[in-house]
Length: 271
Image 1 (cartoon, rainbow, N blue to C red):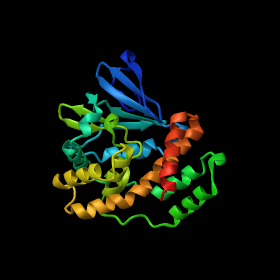
Image 2: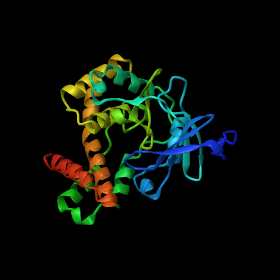
Image 3: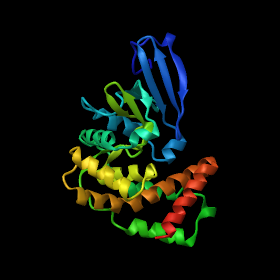
Image 4: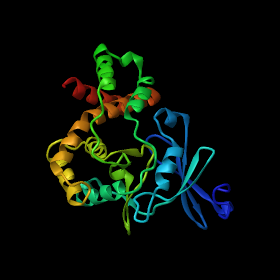
């Protein structure tokens, strides 16, 4: 705090932890305002999280943006302005009109300069999985994924890549996105595919409703083409999620991570 905001009176600070799946975040209340400090750890680095990249992605924030104001980075601690408001209830995602408007606002922001290196992420995760869970079929699938070209790009934009109700804050000025640790520049169809899979939506009616609302909000001009592009990204998102859960299982041995990975293995084996 003293390095990034020397004018703030740190003698009166009150610190409280903020819950999260993959890192340590602290709310800091001061007489001058409230802030959020997010720490870079070795475990998070193994997951591909970079506070430096997060800072860079947020620094492109324009008026009307959809994320917290970044204040600085010091010794692995990223300091952000606190966003006042409440996280969304699950029911707020349906209907998807407001969500589509949020996505369009996000994708109209300037790029951050960090392309989404999906194959590189998968290769990093592969080195960290529990080798006792590796099967010949999984090895063949992984090798095929790494040989397969990524889907063609429709439109490059800043992506959040972890949009769910818990990462959206409802404020008096509209919805805001928090937890930008996986943000990068990439194809808009990849973001929509990640949103569909990450929230357990169907690849039929719910996906179609999201794509239609996104196009109606001005995000893209061809519903049919975007729908097909999202479909092409779904297998990649499935595998990215599987590998994320596998690495988190290896790191924590939390049963819920293993159960989620097992479910995704079953989905991939059915293809």
